Image 1 (cartoon, rainbow, N blue to C red):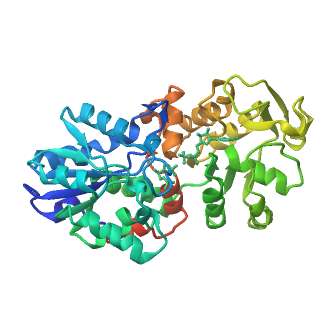
Image 2 (image 1 turned 120 degrees about the vertical axis):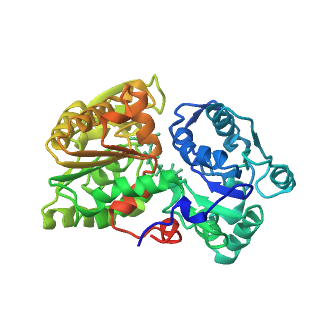
Image 3 (image 1 turned 180 degrees about the vertical axis):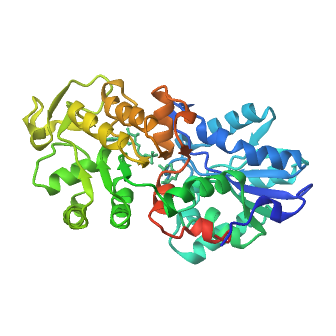
Length: 403
Ligand SMILES: Nc1ncnc2c1ncn2[C@@H]1O[C@H](COP(=O)(O)OP(=O)(O)O)[C@@H](O)[C@H]1O
Ligand SMILES: O=C(OP(=O)(O)O)[C@H](O)COP(=O)(O)O
């Protein structure tokens, strides 16, 4: 089925339009380190402003625990949005409380406001349908129409993504429509060899996708935080590296299934081990099966793939026809642990075929490392969302838009 488009909502002049964006930008000391997701939301927002709509932007930032937490305020994102739109963009102090209501009531045609972080409210991410529905109804009271444009969250069955879309006339914004169109090629007809490269830190989220990817891919390349669960499953000690103990049996099953299916599973052969989690931490390269042999013993933690692994990964990527990459290979934010990610990114730019980068941090990584978006086939704003799409899953936030 086709996604409902913005045009299907008819004229929005003078209407209060709630737009679900993904303004979940990376921050360091309260300053945005990559504003890609704010920029990506501009197309839809500017079109609504130009039509004379009253625009109410809603978003989450980070993973606060269902109550206000100042470190997760949307203030930096709202300020940046105002700068990029060249307009005053006010931020409500709450999401559905008196400050939000007053701001929405004061809106004039063509104006944009932002409500405070959706996840300051327990109803947003609740597993309880009634609790989620009640929060969605409070949001719906602010609008005459709903536009879903936060591609990074369309895989989440959350109030502002799933429930709200069913309470108001709703449609996909330009960003969501474009992402679905671009990723469709990877989902339906990937040229072979098709390689998926996985890394990052949302380990439990991403381990889950492997099962559904195995029947679809020729090569699976593992880096980032999740690689240590693989190494441990193979019987190797991993010191203080990220580890999902309760996933060890599952990962053993994946390793066996990859072999049965003839999927080439690439795991690192060497690791950059650090004394602690810090930019200036002492570090050494050791074999992947002997992480605790570094000078830091069982206290050491793996923060990047080693140079031999980076070379092998780059070769596997360069010789593929379709490559999807989600999740940095290491802690690229620290220069000493960015080489693996740099190497993988470089290889993606050399693919003779379609290369797709997916994920907030992965997109931030390529820009931080000096690559331009147009060196890749597509740079997606969603990591988990694009992964679930290419798994062939139906996503709750797209289903409610007719997809
Ligand atoms: N070995 C590692 N240990 C801890 N964190 C890691 C490791 N490798 C990568 N990371 C972190 O993973 C984060 C990105 O993960 P994630 O949010 O899953 O990616 P994306 O947003 O692209 O989907 C980065 O901040 C990076 O520092
Ligand atoms: O950063 C995001 O996703 P990503 O890390 O999968 O790219 C989105 O903003 C979703 O955030 P969530 O994974 O906390 O629901």
